[in-house]
Length: 74
Image (cartoon, rainbow, N blue to C red; front, side, top):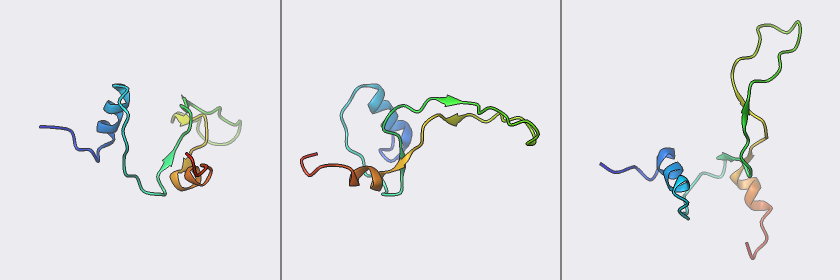
């Protein structure tokens, strides 16, 4: 049984193997241009329970917004 090309695990496996590939993604898909890294945000005193869910340390952008920044030769 092979990996489904629409599954994120398949694309990660290609990336891990340093393979160059093209994938069809929806224009609203959010991506990072650099590895975002994960961290647990600092809790704010007096603002409920302490945070314990990891979050990306950088903001993501939509594929559509990323492509709008490309030059025609890209």
